[in-house]
Image (cartoon, rainbow over all chains, first blue to last red; front, top):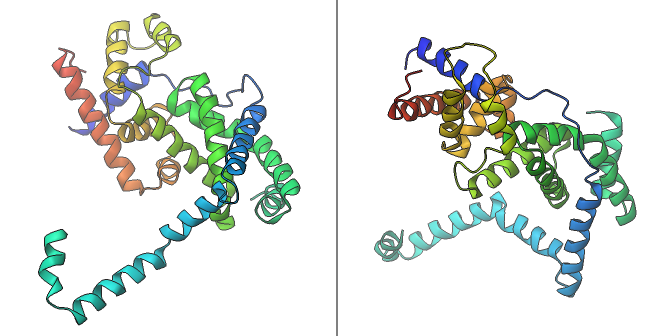
Length: 94
Length: 185
């Protein structure tokens, strides 16, 4: 597609979907809906007893963190160094 | 970052539960209109944009510990909002996203080039709705809304070059789809 085609496609797309006016006004206050959702989250946490959703999320953050990936890589290297016979098994499963 | 943002953010992240909720409400009231406007530009449907604004702030609340003050709240919120819109678009069956208002708008007589009829505009909009969400978001923001590519890249969490590539791919796929329907742009 050459630059001329690109401009024509841009023009066509702009005609098909005109840009929206900036500064769109909200039709209603969304805070009550958000509050309801947040309270539902807290209620769910209360139902789970001491294991709150926040704990689950903080656990996920911990699990997702970069250092965990690093530790996993170190463990893998150590496994290969100590048990070279495991290489074909690892390759099979990877 | 504005000082009221900064105060509210520090309360939101480190304050007591009551102070955190009050700070979160203050942040919500400060930014809800901007977040709603951003999402509306992507999804082009007021009801969906409202739902996704609530979803975005819920995600912000959930991810408050990961907030980096150096990046500023607005950019962070915009990135989360874009992700929420992307998730929503991905969950929708294609071609279902043109609201009745948009269809009515497209049926109206063209105001610009008379060669571009209402039928072509409708077919273009429908073909655009069939594109992958990640291409559609990039093209909507960069081409339709004519936002700076740097701003689009920041919201999508990709480089400016990747935005250019997505826009190019979107337009090429759109042209191919229209050609199959006998429309030569």
